[in-house]
Length: 266
Image 1 (cartoon, rainbow, N blue to C red):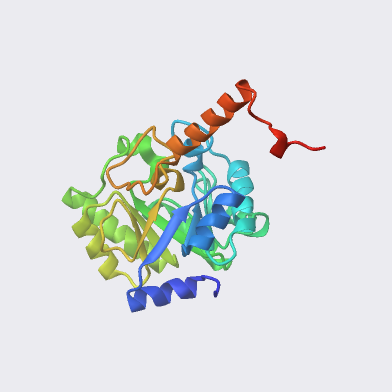
Image 2: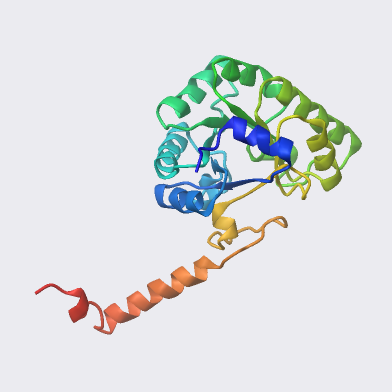
C-alpha cells in the first residue's frame, strides 16, 4: 500500500475519510499497528507515563524521544511517523525548536514533529516549517502545561477559552501545520474548529466530528490501568492476559514442568 504523507491526509479531509492515529513506542508495537492499518503513528511523550513510569510527561527528554522514535520508524512501513517534541525542547527559541525538530527527521527518521500550544509557539512552528519539516499542532488539553491549566481538565467550556482555541487553530493553520490535535475539547467546539479549517483535525476526547481520532496504545489494549480518561475505549484487556501467561510460566518452572522434552536439546 502507498505510504501515508501530508498530501494523503489532506486528501482524506477533502473526501471526508476518517484518519486513524495511534501511539506506539517501540519496534514490535509499530509493526503491529502499521499492519493493522493505522494512518499515523504518534511517538507520544505519553511514553513518560505508560512506558517509563513517570507521573506525567514533563521529565521526558530528547534522548528518550529520539530513541523510541527511531525504533518506531524501523517498524513502520506504511504509516506516517510523527514525533512529539518533549517539554523544553522548543520553548527556548525558534532556533532551538528547529535544531531539535531536525534531529527527529535526520537521526530518528520521523516524518513530522508535533508541538503543543497555540499563539505562543507560532514563531517556533514558522521556523520549523520554513525548513521543510512538517508540523502537527496540538491545542486544548496540553499535557506539558498541566501545572498552568490545573491538571487534566476539559478545555474550552468557557466562552473566552473557546474563542482562544478557535483563534489558535487558525493561527496554527496559517503557520503551516498540516494537522492539529484537539484534546479534551467539547464536541460542539471541536466541530466548529474542524469546519473552519482546511487542514485535518485529530481528536482525542473531542467527539466524533473531528477529521480523525487518536488514542494511546497502552490504553486501548488495557495494559496501562493507573488512569482511564472518559474518552478511552478499551478494545482488549491484555494486562490480565499477560499476567495470566507469566503466572503460568512461573508455576510450570516451580512445578518442574518446564522445560520439558519438547523444549530441550539432545
